[in-house]
Every structure is written in structure tokens, then in C-alpha cells.
Length: 187
Image (cartoon, rainbow, N blue to C red; front, top):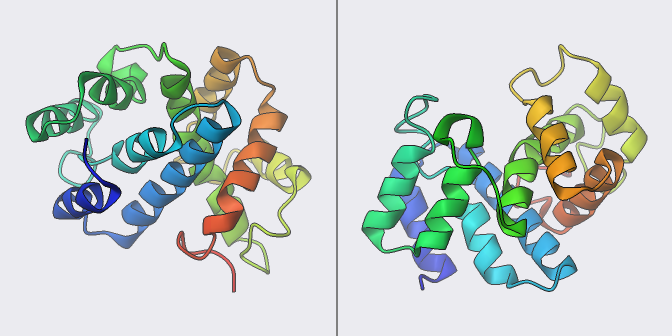
């Protein structure tokens, strides 16, 4: 299996925009946290989170993403279950439904980490340390806020996981706090 360093190198061969790298780090951190909480392999889940959007900058269309990413990872030698998880995070486009716990979390928190990060960025502190559920819920209701985040995917993921949305939001905030600086938040 590939190391984190090897995976980052591969990711950066295909992703140059800082915001995409920060998103990869955010999803990685959240996946590691959820893996620990569920007694799973946090490094493996983290790598899946890190690599899930490897194709996005080169193939930013729903016609090609995440299928091109799956091809890239398969060609590089990532395991089939790894590739399957990446394909399942784009269920609506790939047609591959998230089945495993890892896949269900990736499907859900890909969008949720983006939303939480967006909420933190508009706060005076630009921090997750003082971010609370009520602030995220308030922004959730504002459909003009973070339009690029698909709230329906997050809600569908919450149902797949059988975890209340509020709980997932709180857990994801907790998961992201330790990597706040790495993902461009905090002062």
C-alpha cells in the first residue's frame, strides 16, 4: 500500500490549487477521526479521504468525476476497495452506491467538510475552535450560502449512516479542529 507521502506526491501531480489540497486534507482528517471512532484503520480511511478528488482539477465534470479518479488510482496500483470507495463518493455520477461504512462516511463528509469550512471562514475568528452546531445550522437554512455544497448529499449520507445530521455536524467539527491551520482556518 502507498504511504501518505507517496499519496500526497501523486495528489499534487494532479492538483495545483491550494483550496483543493486543503479540502483533501480536511476530508483526510475527518475520515481518520471517523475510522478511530468506529474501530477501523484510520490511516487507510485517511488515505481514501486524501485521494478522493484526485481527478477534480483535470476532470471537473460530473461526466468524468470521480470515474477518471478511479481509473487514475487503479492504474497507479491502489487496491480495488480503495478505488470503489472513491467511485462511491460520487454515487450520483458513478452509479456506485456507498455500501461499506467507509464509503458512507466519505460520501457524506466530502460535502460536509466543505460546508463547515465555509461557515468557519465567514466567522470573525475564522476558526473551528469556537464554532458550534447552532452556527452551522443557521447557515444551513440560508440556501444562498455555500451554494456549491450539495446539502441533499449530506442529508442522504446521514440517512445511510443512520446518524442524525446534528450529530454528524458536531463530530465533523471535532474531527477538523486539530487540522484547522493545515486547512486554512484560524488566526
